[in-house]
Image 1 (cartoon, rainbow, N blue to C red):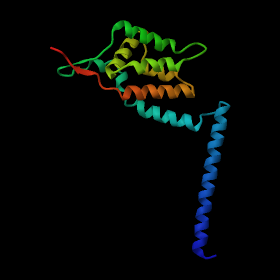
Image 2 (image 1 turned 120 degrees about the vertical axis):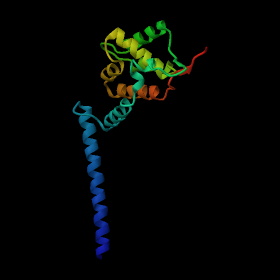
Image 3 (image 1 turned 60 degrees about the vertical axis):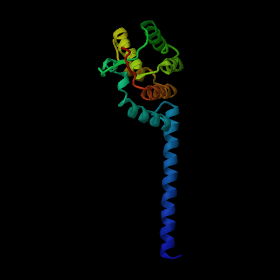
Image 4 (image 1 turned 45 degrees about the vertical axis):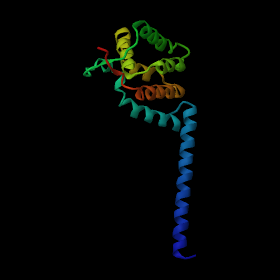
Length: 167
């Protein structure tokens, strides 16, 4: 065997060792996560996506809907509907059982970022807390974190909601 073949075999061996150790590390990480020690690989990926998306989520600001946009007004929802949505979100977190699908359903009904902000503003007035922080804190299991990521994705992709006012 010449020197080039030895180098190639050595590199192949290093790659195989790397792949084996990475697979072993990932398996151990997931195994520990199943018994409550640490987080799984998929949980880590979800958390990384949440962190990246949360930084850009200004639609959860109670002030967003109040922006002054020349010649345009914020598209909102009726107060009764707002109160209903806030109660639905609040009831989605129970003492024994949570229903992230129920919370997700509210955000799927919203058409504009201004409506998300309007709900966040009313939430803050009623519950004296930040809606986004409350959701992030309460939706804490792996499947609930995925639902929270869906909420962030839905709201991020909504149109602004600043529409031309009729004169």
